Amino acid sequence: MTQSTAYIILNILVILAGCFITACGIYRFVNGLFHSIIEFVLGIYYLLAGVCVVLLEIVFPQKLVNLFGFYTYWFGKGALISLIGLLILGNWGFFLAAGIIVIAVGIVCMIFHFILGCPRPLVNRSVERKPEPQGQHA
Image (cartoon, rainbow, N blue to C red; front, side, top):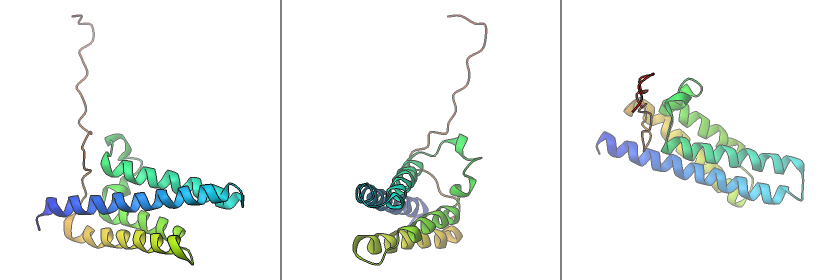
């Protein structure tokens, strides 16, 4: 397996984990709407976290490197995903399965940090355009 193939496989696994996080968020949000404020807030948190994981895996803007520098390494990405998976982990059904899958993806990312090095987003849009010179009119 080449290094670029491993990058793509891990990117897809992280996107899958983000989809599980988002699905847990939708389920908790809908259930928590009528049961308790804690379920409602956790649902919103999972929704935001899942969408951010998926979007940052597809496109990671260069401006966010200073804010989320840990996410530019497989270990940091895996640690964040594992922590979210621990929050998801439940005693039954979907939350148990989703929590285990998300934690497993996080652990795989942390292990591959020592094998592959820094990850790359699937689509690199960090190329900045050169500013046009001031004072010149077309």
